[in-house]
Length: 129
Image (cartoon, rainbow, N blue to C red):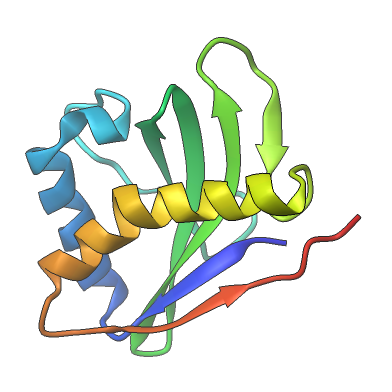
């Protein structure tokens, strides 16, 4: 289970916004000089990684009709390879905190870049235990 954000603009616009954000804040993208959108083996998704708070954050993006979807998938510490899936490997409060940190570091910046558009919805799946 992921946590999804649906944007009222195309996948190309989302990719352009991510490239703009990467140019403004390269540290947020793990120091990568050029952002590349590689297909995830799961199908129509493209993987994008972010770095903040000493964590590597895996996300997936895709087109959804005329909209774009951004999914928060997992977090891992830079110091080890312990990957934790959102909505599965965290307790309620830690999960909520991880989602809030992602919104503060990434989603709000994307929303600001696309100020004429709005986030259509945020879909937070139930925590599975």
